[in-house]
Amino acid sequence: MPEPLPARLVVLVSGSGTNLQALLDACTDPSYGASVVAVGADRDDIEGLARADAAGVPTFVKRVKDFTTREHWDRAMAETVANFDPDLLVLAGFMKLVGEEFHSRFEGRIVNTHPALSPSFPGMHGPAEALEHGVKISGCTLFVVDDGVDTGPIVAQRAVPVEDDDTTATLHDRIKVVEREMLVDAVGRMAREGFAITGRKVRFGQ
Image (cartoon, rainbow, N blue to C red; front, side, top):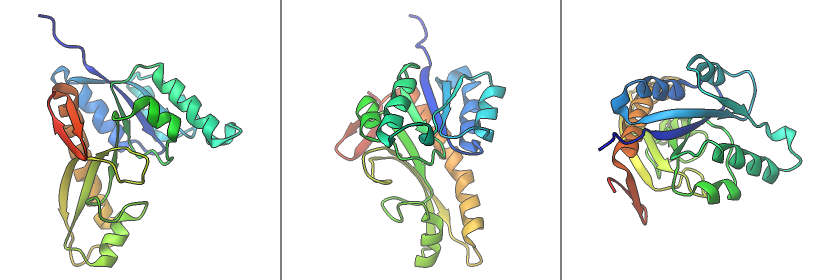
Protein backbone atom coordinates (compact mmCIF):
# COMPACT_ATOMS: atom_id res chain seq x y z
CA MET A 1 0.00 0.00 0.00
CA PRO A 2 1.45 3.42 -0.93
CA GLU A 3 2.33 5.90 1.80
CA PRO A 4 -0.41 8.51 2.37
CA LEU A 5 0.31 11.91 0.88
CA PRO A 6 1.27 14.64 3.36
CA ALA A 7 -1.59 16.86 4.52
CA ARG A 8 -1.59 20.15 2.62
CA LEU A 9 -1.19 23.20 4.86
CA VAL A 10 -1.84 26.80 3.87
CA VAL A 11 -0.50 29.23 6.48
CA LEU A 12 -1.63 32.87 6.79
CA VAL A 13 0.68 35.38 8.46
CA SER A 14 0.84 39.10 9.23
CA GLY A 15 4.28 39.53 10.80
CA SER A 16 7.52 37.81 11.69
CA GLY A 17 6.29 34.28 11.07
CA THR A 18 7.92 32.47 13.99
CA ASN A 19 5.04 29.98 14.18
CA LEU A 20 5.28 29.54 10.41
CA GLN A 21 9.00 28.80 10.73
CA ALA A 22 8.30 26.16 13.36
CA LEU A 23 5.86 24.48 10.97
CA LEU A 24 8.27 24.76 8.02
CA ASP A 25 11.00 23.14 10.11
CA ALA A 26 8.69 20.33 11.24
CA CYS A 27 7.56 19.64 7.68
CA THR A 28 11.12 18.87 6.57
CA ASP A 29 10.72 15.52 8.38
CA PRO A 30 8.67 13.19 6.15
CA SER A 31 7.27 11.46 9.23
CA TYR A 32 5.57 14.70 10.30
CA GLY A 33 2.85 14.03 7.75
CA ALA A 34 2.26 17.55 6.47
CA SER A 35 3.63 20.01 3.93
CA VAL A 36 3.22 23.79 3.74
CA VAL A 37 2.00 24.33 0.17
CA ALA A 38 1.45 28.11 0.35
CA VAL A 39 1.82 31.10 2.66
CA GLY A 40 -0.52 34.07 2.43
CA ALA A 41 -0.42 37.49 4.04
CA ASP A 42 -2.45 40.67 4.37
CA ARG A 43 0.58 42.95 3.95
CA ASP A 44 3.80 43.18 1.92
CA ASP A 45 7.42 43.04 3.00
CA ILE A 46 7.04 41.02 6.20
CA GLU A 47 9.47 38.49 7.57
CA GLY A 48 6.88 35.71 7.36
CA LEU A 49 6.86 35.99 3.56
CA ALA A 50 10.66 36.01 3.50
CA ARG A 51 10.69 32.80 5.54
CA ALA A 52 8.35 31.17 3.02
CA ASP A 53 10.48 32.37 0.09
CA ALA A 54 13.60 30.96 1.73
CA ALA A 55 11.85 27.60 2.07
CA GLY A 56 10.73 27.64 -1.57
CA VAL A 57 7.04 27.87 -0.63
CA PRO A 58 4.68 29.87 -2.91
CA THR A 59 3.34 33.09 -1.38
CA PHE A 60 0.49 35.51 -2.03
CA VAL A 61 -0.59 38.86 -0.58
CA LYS A 62 -4.13 40.23 -0.32
CA ARG A 63 -4.22 43.70 1.24
CA VAL A 64 -7.59 44.84 2.53
CA LYS A 65 -6.99 48.38 1.23
CA ASP A 66 -6.73 47.06 -2.33
CA PHE A 67 -10.40 45.95 -2.30
CA THR A 68 -13.55 48.03 -2.39
CA THR A 69 -15.12 46.17 0.55
CA ARG A 70 -14.04 43.79 3.27
CA GLU A 71 -16.35 41.19 1.71
CA HIS A 72 -14.49 41.44 -1.62
CA TRP A 73 -11.19 40.96 0.21
CA ASP A 74 -12.59 37.94 2.03
CA ARG A 75 -13.81 36.39 -1.22
CA ALA A 76 -10.48 36.98 -2.96
CA MET A 77 -8.57 35.49 -0.05
CA ALA A 78 -10.86 32.45 0.01
CA GLU A 79 -10.54 31.88 -3.74
CA THR A 80 -6.76 32.14 -3.65
CA VAL A 81 -6.47 29.76 -0.71
CA ALA A 82 -8.84 27.30 -2.42
CA ASN A 83 -6.52 27.16 -5.43
CA PHE A 84 -3.96 25.39 -3.21
CA ASP A 85 -6.47 22.72 -2.17
CA PRO A 86 -5.61 22.79 1.55
CA ASP A 87 -6.45 20.06 4.02
CA LEU A 88 -5.85 22.49 6.89
CA LEU A 89 -5.49 26.27 7.20
CA VAL A 90 -3.28 27.66 9.94
CA LEU A 91 -3.66 31.29 11.02
CA ALA A 92 -0.16 31.93 12.39
CA GLY A 93 -0.17 35.44 13.75
CA PHE A 94 -2.68 36.49 11.09
CA MET A 95 -4.15 39.75 12.35
CA LYS A 96 -7.30 39.95 10.24
CA LEU A 97 -10.63 38.33 11.02
CA VAL A 98 -11.76 36.20 8.10
CA GLY A 99 -15.36 36.59 7.04
CA GLU A 100 -18.43 34.55 6.27
CA GLU A 101 -17.42 33.38 2.80
CA PHE A 102 -14.01 32.26 4.01
CA HIS A 103 -15.62 30.35 6.88
CA SER A 104 -18.13 28.67 4.62
CA ARG A 105 -15.43 27.51 2.18
CA PHE A 106 -13.16 26.03 4.85
CA GLU A 107 -15.41 25.37 7.83
CA GLY A 108 -13.86 23.02 10.35
CA ARG A 109 -10.43 23.21 8.69
CA ILE A 110 -9.13 26.55 10.03
CA VAL A 111 -7.07 26.64 13.23
CA ASN A 112 -5.66 29.55 15.17
CA THR A 113 -3.70 30.09 18.37
CA HIS A 114 -4.52 32.36 21.29
CA PRO A 115 -2.06 33.39 24.05
CA ALA A 116 -4.37 32.51 26.94
CA LEU A 117 -6.27 29.51 28.24
CA SER A 118 -9.62 29.83 26.47
CA PRO A 119 -12.36 30.64 27.20
CA SER A 120 -10.60 33.16 29.48
CA PHE A 121 -9.27 36.47 28.14
CA PRO A 122 -10.28 36.40 24.46
CA GLY A 123 -9.14 39.10 22.06
CA MET A 124 -5.92 41.00 21.46
CA HIS A 125 -4.70 41.45 25.04
CA GLY A 126 -4.81 37.99 26.63
CA PRO A 127 -1.46 38.10 28.50
CA ALA A 128 -2.06 41.63 29.81
CA GLU A 129 -5.56 40.79 31.01
CA ALA A 130 -4.34 37.58 32.64
CA LEU A 131 -1.76 39.59 34.62
CA GLU A 132 -4.31 42.23 35.57
CA HIS A 133 -6.67 39.51 36.79
CA GLY A 134 -3.95 38.01 38.96
CA VAL A 135 -4.09 34.46 37.59
CA LYS A 136 -1.33 32.08 38.67
CA ILE A 137 -1.43 30.00 35.49
CA SER A 138 -1.86 31.27 31.97
CA GLY A 139 -0.97 29.56 28.71
CA CYS A 140 -2.07 29.12 25.13
CA THR A 141 -4.86 27.52 23.14
CA LEU A 142 -5.16 26.07 19.65
CA PHE A 143 -8.75 26.15 18.43
CA VAL A 144 -10.84 25.56 15.34
CA VAL A 145 -11.97 28.96 14.08
CA ASP A 146 -15.68 29.77 14.20
CA ASP A 147 -17.47 33.08 13.65
CA GLY A 148 -16.60 34.41 17.12
CA VAL A 149 -13.38 35.86 18.54
CA ASP A 150 -11.23 33.06 20.01
CA THR A 151 -14.39 31.06 20.74
CA GLY A 152 -14.03 27.94 18.56
CA PRO A 153 -13.72 24.31 19.69
CA ILE A 154 -10.43 23.69 21.49
CA VAL A 155 -7.86 21.40 19.86
CA ALA A 156 -5.04 21.73 22.41
CA GLN A 157 -3.93 23.80 25.39
CA ARG A 158 -0.66 24.24 27.28
CA ALA A 159 -0.19 25.84 30.69
CA VAL A 160 2.41 28.51 31.50
CA PRO A 161 2.95 29.54 35.14
CA VAL A 162 2.74 33.26 35.89
CA GLU A 163 5.76 34.55 37.83
CA ASP A 164 5.46 37.25 40.48
CA ASP A 165 7.76 39.60 38.56
CA ASP A 166 6.19 38.99 35.14
CA THR A 167 5.40 41.85 32.82
CA THR A 168 3.08 41.48 29.86
CA ALA A 169 6.16 41.15 27.63
CA THR A 170 7.94 38.47 29.69
CA LEU A 171 4.77 36.41 30.13
CA HIS A 172 3.89 36.68 26.44
CA ASP A 173 7.43 35.69 25.41
CA ARG A 174 7.25 32.50 27.49
CA ILE A 175 3.78 31.74 26.15
CA LYS A 176 5.05 32.10 22.57
CA VAL A 177 7.69 29.41 23.11
CA VAL A 178 5.11 26.95 24.42
CA GLU A 179 2.62 28.03 21.75
CA ARG A 180 5.00 27.05 18.95
CA GLU A 181 5.56 23.61 20.49
CA MET A 182 1.81 23.10 20.92
CA LEU A 183 1.06 24.22 17.36
CA VAL A 184 3.62 21.90 15.78
CA ASP A 185 2.54 18.93 17.90
CA ALA A 186 -1.21 19.39 17.38
CA VAL A 187 -1.08 20.21 13.66
CA GLY A 188 1.11 17.16 13.10
CA ARG A 189 -1.41 14.97 14.88
CA MET A 190 -4.29 16.49 12.91
CA ALA A 191 -2.38 15.76 9.71
CA ARG A 192 -1.34 12.20 10.55
CA GLU A 193 -4.34 10.98 12.52
CA GLY A 194 -7.19 13.13 11.25
CA PHE A 195 -9.65 14.73 13.65
CA ALA A 196 -13.35 15.00 14.29
CA ILE A 197 -15.43 17.81 15.80
CA THR A 198 -18.50 16.84 17.80
CA GLY A 199 -20.24 19.82 19.32
CA ARG A 200 -17.42 21.67 21.06
CA LYS A 201 -15.15 18.64 21.39
CA VAL A 202 -12.24 18.01 19.04
CA ARG A 203 -10.80 14.50 19.02
CA PHE A 204 -7.82 13.18 17.08
CA GLY A 205 -8.39 10.18 14.85
CA GLN A 206 -11.04 9.51 12.24
